[in-house]
Length: 480
Image (cartoon, rainbow, N blue to C red; front, side):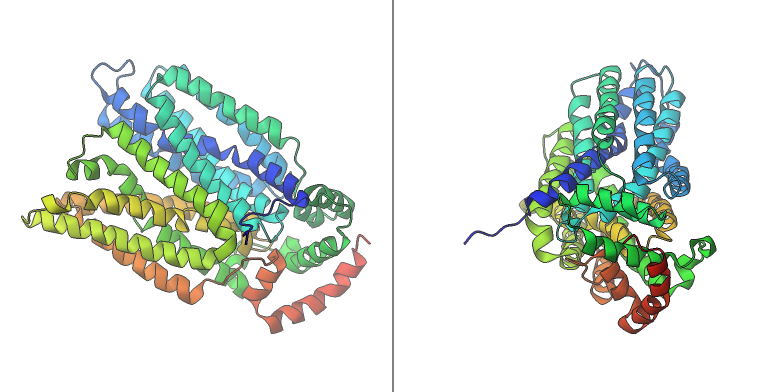
């Protein structure tokens, strides 16, 4: 018996194309994230053509994180005014210009400033792209499509580590400058989100967009459902404010779910594991050099995410994968903590030389099957149209702050104790708590429309009441 793990129906072809064209922009986000891995040691070396101090290098490393919040805010202001498509298209030229600027930079502060700007585009992308993909996707393949964002980010990080080991900053930057242009050409051909058109009252354009995305003419039933959903969710948009995220019970529950997934993602120890890959390999007496170890690490993660995306997500659903991912990460970093405890207290760890590498690879695999794309899929599904832009803006800023905080916590633990056992034990505990919270609070959204997810968050009785109140408004504005 053959099991169809991915839907290849003709009606999904343009959804696949639109998603690939969109996530191509995320390659540059992954490149910017991993840029310091091959090039910062070169900048810090005595023979560097761009003299750089450790302090200057540290600012260069965190520049993308500092740039993300303002980019997210700008995107949140634009996405409901000019649309999801054109907000994303505006990003490409800036990224291309910045990479060209890096190629010709003569000081570390020029590079830092340009990486800050690219970081701003990343903040904008992670605000708009999950929204766009979530709104154009058929419920049967939505989780698969949103998971491709994680694949693109990891591919970008792997790409810059590979080309960075062969080419100079100048050549690598010019190669990277081409990618946003490819994205722009592809994304120019895709339609705007039907939800955006419906939000603006342009029902005919929304219907035409949906016909392209679904590859068929008969979309009246789905269009009817989208129109009703947007009318109900908008609730007179001129009165919708930031406080609606916290005063409306369904939005509050969505925020709580996102915070759980985000905190579990960040406090599972992903960034420190990436940063200390070389150290962990050395603890296992490995002769693999630093650059190659990072390439191996990223390759394992990419393979795991691809397998999870193509063969697992649509079969098991996001909730189950998040639970397995959090539990697996907790056990993996616990194994690392135990190894370093044994080493710190003078036990002979030669018999366990394999443990750090095994635990690190296991962690990477377990993180990749759920937590790696959990935040993005949650953001694309849980928030209604009237607050989605604000929600994704705040979520991206919160995610960046938590990523910075967890890196600082690792540094403090490590500096104060001189051991990696305590921070890894802390991450194991956080992942375990996150797993319990996901079990208790995370709903399964597999196969549900965006409106059905709202119904799940609101509750059947309250949802039915709201629907009756909004029915008159829908009839008066119907496209039929």
